[in-house]
Amino acid sequence: MERNVTCKTLPVSRARSHTAVGGAAYRAGENIKARGQGEDGGDKWYRYGNRRDTVREAFILAPEGSPDFVYDRSELWNRVEEKETRKNARLGRDTQLGFAYELPKSEQRKLVVEFVQREFVARGFVADVAIHDYGRGLPAMGASDTQQQRIRELAAAGIPFLERDEAKASDDV
Image 1 (cartoon, rainbow, N blue to C red):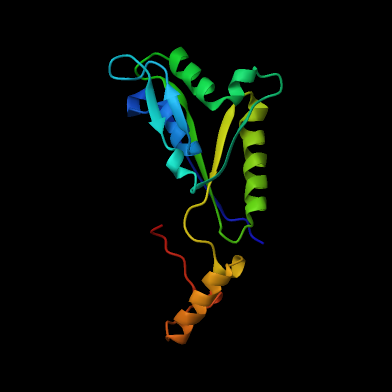
Image 2: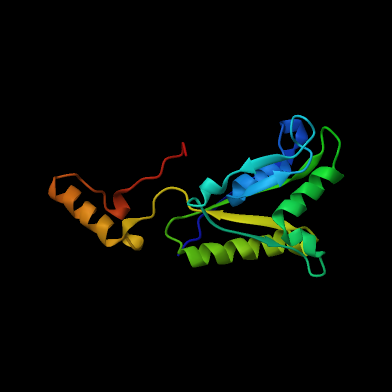
């Protein structure tokens, strides 16, 4: 099977009005309190716990011998925010990998961990990883009984379906 992977990376920086704590909460689908980021200098909550249906898994990988706090997402990103105080500080990098739907979830996870270990952890960086499920899975890749029944109903109603070799990719995506 050909491994179709896309990758894009962007800085997480104050110059772009980003907050490391807010971004981490969003990507992990968690509620995280940012120390001192409220309007009055108090704490501010980033509440993204409702995204848990999109976030398949979130975990932190770190080099051997890293302090325990790096495995606590809230503490890790609050400390980054506290340490990097310049208005144009780069707080991290947001790297997004996209895999073909044909890859099983276990293979996607394996590729993500392999990439993160090689490109970040082996170079001394901590990586906060969130694996998301976006879009729809292919029916051929394990549709539920309900989905299979719906597909049969659509086919019986005369809705045309393309064969896999008839489908064409768009360069606009």
